[in-house]
Image 1 (cartoon, rainbow, N blue to C red):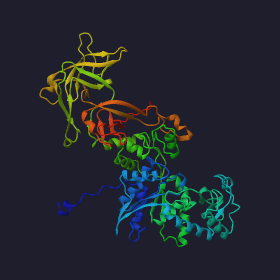
Image 2: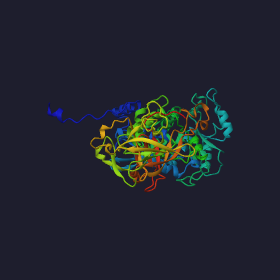
Image 3: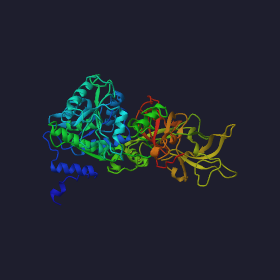
Image 4: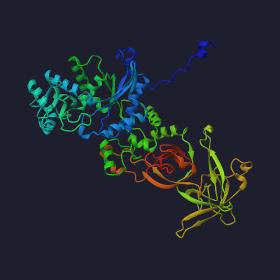
Length: 590
């Protein structure tokens, strides 16, 4: 073998292929966006600070920041704060936190050092205003004084061309003065509006977004960042392309619902470039399919309804598809990134089954979640021939595939907790857990996992006929891992915890919020599809070491699934656990 061959570095893993990567790679090869001091790929994530981000936004975050990362570019976080009536600092803070939790940063190592690319549309209010004045002066915009009702009626619909506003040919000087008076606060909300005039026949365009779109409206509202400096605010379709151009965005990636907005995006940047505001090349917009996930709704209005009507406890309720809800539920950033990579990027809408997301979560948690024993529906087990007050230590790997993680220990005592389902008075065929002796037939033999083999000798009931305890005897020479213990051949093997030392804990068994895979499709009442079993709270018993579980720490509760110590309600020495996901995908609406 030659030295060159021997010393060559392994090939880097191939990046996942999709149409956006093909566009970017072609642009990089041609130098389409080459500018001194700037990377060839600059993307952006532009949320409105009027609510909490959800799993659909996570796809966009992973896509935009991921593309920038993979092509040595940068991604900007830009808040589209142009609607002060609905915007709050709380939303700004949670959006920033969500982006960072997912593993991304808006900082970029530039030639002169680290650059912080956290932006707001309000950073550009002065430039946006000056460009609007330019459009008026050039005859590309006019102030319309129609009522909202008349404007809507004259806009037409998909089958009917629109009608020109009676103010469309208003003299430019008059529109300019009205616009300045709007800015000066001389008019009430809705009294005037600034509209673009793209072409003489724009109102008959088959694309509704090109029919003299509104670009400024009057809103006498206090703005979180600019206070009361402005009472007119630009519309999103006007603000977005200009902000992209001012930030030197190369690839403006958005979801398919903005496809029909692209002609206005292109027209506006071309028109303003001709006026000397921007140099070529200007940004290009590309659209991809939004995330449609079964058993989930992503409408901000409907999510807010769930919060306002107290169907859930808040935006971070672990049943919510918000990023803060997924985080509290116990999802990991890595599992969400894996999911977004696995579903890919396409131009056609489709549905992704929830099992795909849950599968990525299990795949991420399995190799790194420590194991623990928990009894969720406890039934007392009394080892009749084990001395009272005595105990001995049993041990189990922290992780079965990672011996370097060590062992965990827990005591074996006379009284234990087992699962209710691990005992049957009259066993069904193939049942290998506890059942009592019948006639001259002894009771079943079962190994207590990592402990002893036991034999059922009887059981206790209360006055209502409910089984309250199972009685067994143990075989002293059968302890797991000791010489001769493997001579006991039993089919049943169950988990348990010591009643004397177990940690009593609140465990929340979360499930999908809806029973319908498409709860709000086709105009359905999504509230009628709420899953009554989406949350069950139980008092469980856990192995004693679990008292030290830290908030946000994840475990596999053997046999039951993956759980996390709740990041809000857990206290030192008293964790509260949320079920993240079951061990297997066997979901069905109950």
